[in-house]
Structures are given as C-alpha cells and as structure tokens.
Length: 468
Ligand code: BGP
Image (cartoon, rainbow, N blue to C red; front, side):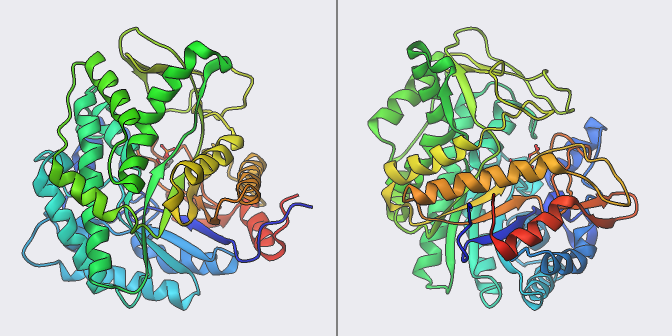
C-alpha cells in the first residue's frame, strides 16, 4: 500500500486571468492579453470561469471535495490599473478581501501569487520587466499587498513561472508581445524578474510580516535523447536556459561559472547579450536564503537532441497531436518519438521526471527548505455527461505524480504539498477552452460546475491517503 503522509497538503490551483473573467469590471486596468487575444480572434478570457462572481461556489466545492488550499493570484491591474498609480483601486482591493475571507470561512487556505503572466498593459507596453521601472513598480505593488492582506494571507508567491512567461513572450512568441527567437530578451527578462523577486522577498522579511513567501518555477527535467553522450551537452544547455539559471539566481544568489558559460554559449550562438550588474547580484545574494519554500510546476519532461539548425518552434495550441516542434539553435531539439505516453498537446507524461527534479533541487540547492508542487495536472478534452464526467486518464496522471512525490520524500526531499492544476476548468492561455484541467467541469455558457470523477477520487484520497 502506498500512502501520502497525513499532513501532506492537497490543494487546487487557479490564476486570476484564467479564472476570474470580469476583465473590465470595477476599474480593472488592461493587460496586454486583452488586445492580443482580441486581435487573434480565437478566444478571449471573458467570461473564463467567472470566478469573480462564482468564487463562493468554487470555495464551497473545495471544502466539500477535500481541497484544503487554493492557489489564486491577485490581478495586479485590479489593484493598480496602470501598474504604478498613486492610489490603489478600492473595488479591486475589496474583491480580494472578500475572496480571502470566504476562503477562510470555508477552511480553505489561500496561497497567493502576485504575478501570474499578467503585468498591467501600461507597464507591459513599456518593455515589461526588461524596463527597470517595472521592477520598482512590482515591488511597490507587492508591498501594498503584503500590508493590505496581512491578516488574511499567510502564504505568498512572488512570481509564477519566469521561464514560461519570458520564453512565451520572446522565444516562442505565443504570449504578447509575440516576439520570436530573441534569446537576449528571454534571458534578460528572467534575470530582471529574479531581481524583482529578490527585492520583494527582502522587503517581506525586513518588514517582518507574519507568514511565508516563495517563488514558483516551472521545472521540466531535461534528459539526453536516447541517453546518448552526444546529446548530454544539449540537455545541459536547455536545462540551464529553462531551469538552472533561475535556480542559481534563487538559491545561490549568483550564477555559477558553469551556468554563465552555458549562457554565454547560447547567447553567442544566437548573437545575443545580457547585462548583469553588481547591484543586481547584491540583491540576489541578499535574498538567497529568504525563500521559505519553492513551488515547482511540473507537467512534462523533455528528451533533448543536439541541434545546430535554425531556430524552429511550432507551438501546438490546438490539441492536434504530433504537431509540436521545438528546436533551438545552438541549444537542442526536443524529441517526441520515444515510447512515452503523451497528451494531445504532445506533453510527455513522465512522472519520474518530477521525482528526479525534486531530488536534484535538494541536492544542488540544499538551502531550498521545502517544496510544494504548485501545479500539476492533465490537459484533456473532457466529454460532458450529466451522469458522470469520466476523466480516468486524469486520475491516473495525478496519482502517478503523487507517487513521484512520495518517492522524492522517501529519498529525503522535503515535499509538503501538491496543488492540482486546476481546481475547476479555466481558460488556457494559448489553447482557450478546449484544454480542460479541472476537478470540476465548467460549462462556460452557463457557468455551472459539475464534479468530475477525479473530484470524487480526490475527496476519497484526502480521507484515506491511499495511492495504490
Ligand atoms: C502553466 C501556467 C498555468 C497553466 C498551465 C497549463 O504554465 O502556470 O497558468 O496555464 O501551465 O498550461 P496550458 O493552459 O497552456 O495547458
């Protein structure tokens, strides 16, 4: 019998822009996504899951189905519509008070992310985090939230997934401003966001707020394709680009020579550059031991082959299996032809990668303190059925990744909780509404919620902790 520890936290994750809808309500400022999606014309984040109005129902379902904690994010542009306004927007501020109060009333602990891909447009259009003014504005916004919600929020997260957002913006081009193959912007954006993170957590600790603070990185494990020696360097370079550069900044407070050499190699192959000042490094250094926890978002691992051709990415944003291409010049190419199951979006289902990643973090960054899996789940085209929405593949996916957590725990890693992505179905950034993840099915026309088979399974799991 395989059991989850009794005290292991079982939560559900959401994000403001993907769940709330109400994109112009009550003085909310614009985010770059609003115009970007409008122009694309495929789908928009309205009404999404109407969480802005439906949160009492989602929290009630959380309580009923054994979801002990909820990851939500604050939409920066509800608080400061232009990101750096002199005064906060009272209606936006109130919304989150109401939400946090309701969560506590339901016995559901809020874990609150300050930035989940949604910089206010007024700052985004000025270069987002490439512009140092955004760093300052973020820290001010963070301080406002720490003060305002100190009675209600005990778990803070500065950023959600710095690599996916910067690569989405500047490498893959699937996030606004939709720039492709710009390694300078990708790496500079990552570094600048890490400086913003460092400043925000230093401030949190200096002001002695009650509670804990951490950051979330998306950490997909990079393996050499076919285990071959000639592909090891490619896997290493890709690991630096997506994982290790950020982990060094988070936990070492500087970039090791090994990491900087890899960064230089990637940049020189792509005519790029990065600027890192002594002052930046001092901020990173001051924050390296202040992270109370690391959030790991994990969906897949990658098998990487050496690649010297032109940059070539095709993002599968439709769920048409077999259409993904991800090849980075001078870094490596993701391969998909192994005997490993994958979902309709070509994401390899590989729970061992989660275990391996957690073990590596603990080994290479021993000051990590503790780990939550802050997102894991399965994108799936659920069939609606009023009797029972049978999402057995999702149950299997979650169960296997929870087993990976227990394996990491057995190997000595301090893993303390798991948030399924997502609590209820939400809007997906580059896939819209056909890629569902929720324990609760959302009929996006009526905004009715229906517990899926996975919700019933989850409830039982929370009671008996049995993963067998
Ligand atoms: C993570 C994001 C989430 C969520 C998830 C699933 O990168 O933090 O916001 O979207 O991935 O991604 P997708 O919706 O593209 O399938």
